[in-house]
Amino acid sequence: MYLKTLTIRGFKSFASKTTFEFEPGVTSVIGPNGSGKSNVVDALAWVMGEQGAKNLRGGKMEDVIFAGTTGRAPLGRAQVELTIDNSDGTLPIDFSEVTISRTLFRSGGSEYHISGEPARLLDIQELLSDSGLGREMHVIVGQGQLDRILQATPEERRGFIEEAAGILKHRRRKERSERK
Ligand code: ATP
Ligand code: MG
Image 1 (spheres, rainbow, N blue to C red):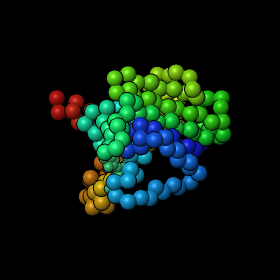
Image 2 (cartoon, rainbow, N blue to C red; image 1 turned 90 degrees about the vertical axis):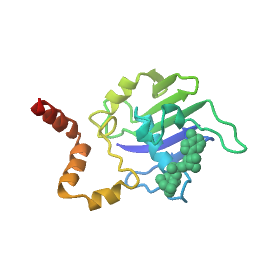
Image 3 (cartoon, rainbow, N blue to C red; image 1 turned 180 degrees about the horizontal axis):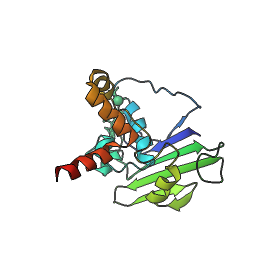
Image 4 (cartoon, rainbow, N blue to C red; image 1 turned 135 degrees about the vertical axis):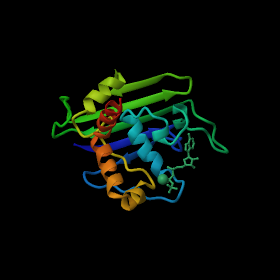
């Protein structure tokens, strides 16, 4: 399984339809400051179901919709489409290729699709769970975090690993119950 294409339109700085094609293995996105590199990563997290505006570096979810620039009017919707190669059958679906998409309208509504069929957020989360993708599964190391990881104390580093492994919330819950 690998990410095959990412198509973005109306999401953050990508006003016009923009398609990224990935190959298996490592992909690098290179560009000047402010050119939209992190926005590509935000689009990936968003289409896989990210619900936290802060994790997308915004104040509210609507901030992901193209807000306009001088000479280009704001748009009414953001749409991101991700095609995943499933020829090894990692995803529990009978297709060698799966496309998930998410649309958010400025008027408020939002839509999800799996291979063109209307779906719920829950359907996308279930499709991606057990695949290493999806909610709290994939790990995105944000800008500036790399330095924090390198300079962290052993305890802090353990925290990062626990967070990535998804066990931090269980430890916090345990600590909370022990305090009582
Ligand atoms: P750096 O190298 O500094 O990390 P970057 O390539 O990661 O830069 P991004 O943070 O992805 O850059 O993009 C920032 C740009 O995206 C800014 O110019 C910002 O105005 C623009 N942007 C963010 N949200 C929107 C939006 N909703 N509408 C229009 N433009 C947006
Ligand atoms: Mg960046």
